[in-house]
Length: 447
Image 1 (cartoon, helix red, strand yellow):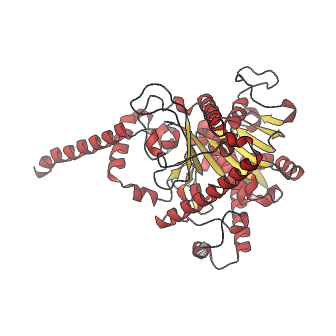
Image 2: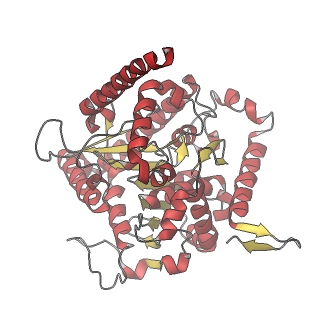
Image 3: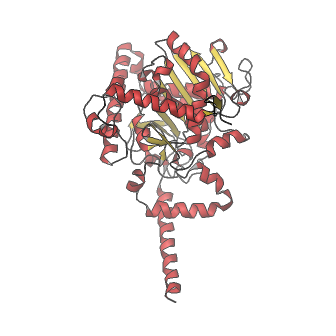
């Protein structure tokens, strides 16, 4: 009898929790996520619309005779295209991509397309993961995306090494959209950890632009690699805010109301501080760029504003109730709004035409990024985020201050030996992901 009397009380608590959750969600808009961030400069945001067009070019069957090119084209010179890989070439182990040598911008670009909803192999990559399944460089990553990145690196290692050594002043850029953004982010991490495999390329030459990024790495990795990885989010895009693992969403399609109820109770009852300290929880990677073009309770689109930061807490943790949550994920819209935003920044910043001031602004941008990155790492350590230590100073990003305490857990070995052990460990991870050994010790592709 006493148990039956307690049921109405439980129902009341549940209804109050749901009401509080719905109230917070109805008042929360995408602009709140980045309202305290700084404004991006034209120099740092310039690659985004261009790389979006390169990603769109992956969808074409014949770049010599494109069918869906934007008004100004893809900006790709077919003579500079190294090669283009399709699903037939990757055998479903990774999304299609192009390798392009961009002489105009001194850049070697590897661009991946997004999720193809008609391809089972893409779903297999997404579903190949469980919470805390794969560890990498002191954190957790999405297992399927890491395996796809490992396959690409193994397939393109010789070509990339040749290009990097032939063009020592060119940057190496990985770019992708949606599913491809996760592969690009994983690939940039693996390359940074195994730079000797690509002709000892410097860390500052490696870049990644994750467009509409998937949550693919733990918070300590997301902050630590913010000097390499850049994520671009358009307004209300749902994917960077989807904290529920993608594999759980697909498995719960037949009981979606149950999933929503559980998410409601979890968001209400679990404080954000506790979520931050879960080392297995995945986040959008690197430095974030948020394109904001709509305002709450107003109709139409406004001139887009690009905000940027390296946040630790409040890192797109709330789903936005918006009818644009899916359309803002489309690469076509992201390219258009990114180009509009860049044009507006250039119009307001006439000083970009003066070479001396342009050089000075570039240096100021690099200094600001370095300071923000360091502040984010300090914030992560303040919040006791597991394994949130600073990168080695040999990369030219930080000084040696504070590195000692972060390396205590790694033993008393020298920095050089520590780096070598990291490289060996991560490359062994790649071999383990890609190959099986038979009884005679011979290597064979995993099926």
